[in-house]
Length: 280
Image (cartoon, rainbow, N blue to C red; front, side, top):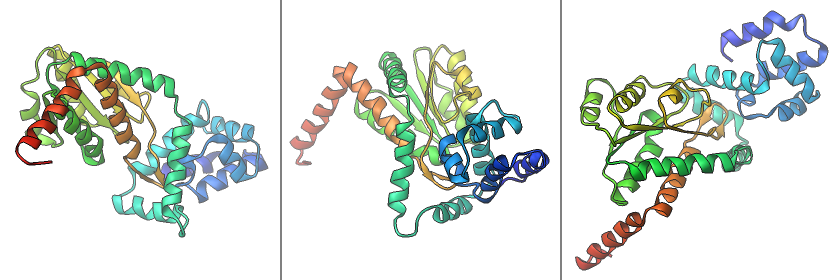
């Protein structure tokens, strides 16, 4: 566990009730597990009632359990190397079935999604892309996976799309041509990417629109976005997979196809020209 949060718990430990101490001890002993637990699940694992967990979070200075959980997730993941994240994931998974553990944690995220709200956000994002001229898709680090998935299919749908994931000086070569009517799509998970902030700022300044995929409902990047798709990620321990962001990317593509006859027509034309030259 991050030292800062261990100190935060230790500071109030003497003032806690016996039940609240059980919660504190479970968190200290199992930092990687609580990042995917609901208040009820943490309560059961600690052997206390759910109200005890909520009161414990407030004693630490949070408005409620969800705020505490989100900050613990950031602290835990931000301070781990990639190898440590995988190592923690291995420890958290049952040795006989890592696959079962991954499916279980992803299922937990899906069950807690607000599907109707996400559908509304995805449809609005699809309409923004449909109305756009060019599309600029950016994803750095692990976020390259859903970003590339989206850009690959957008190009196949006939939408001129530019995918990039580099940072530093080369980054600016990709945004210099953004014009009014273009849209930028950014994937920002776990951390606020400095380049993505520049991309969104420049796109808005030039009269374009922005779409943000993130796991932070209050992300500062949201202020620069015309649509925000917020979803948690599943995983094991401190390791977070990109499976759910990829599914959100696919969902956006199908919403776009549903309102654009051109998208399906482009795919049919692609298949036709392949057949003509013997590439079945």
